[in-house]
Image (cartoon, rainbow, N blue to C red; front, side):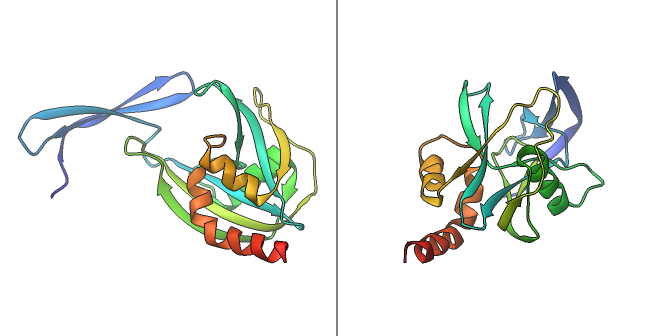
Length: 183
């Protein structure tokens, strides 16, 4: 299979604080097809599985308008174009939760779905400590919770959280930590 040929320039549409991008391709049968994708071209977001010194997971609990319910999420957010990706995610951890860590490793990068222009980068931070108060953006309302690794696994399995990809990327490491804690 070959990539489809783009036959028109991208058209960016702003809807509220979101960006949509209309793309037009020639399909393999020669017919044109328009697709609307989400987020700006080249966007990067990131999140972190933040473990405290006693291996509790720091989560950001927020109401989410899509599912219309409170979700537990990994701290994270958008990366500015001029920002180091890991530094941006650690900045988001501090702003949303007040926690910091200097023991951070990359877990990997994913596209969340086939209609996004954003890549999502995930990290694992160990030995996190609360060093400051939250510093939330206007209109941002976050409750910080500390949960067990088993609860993180259960939340990922039962649609009670976002960024489940990170849990998959860190699964073996988290399972090993959890097993050591159980001994």
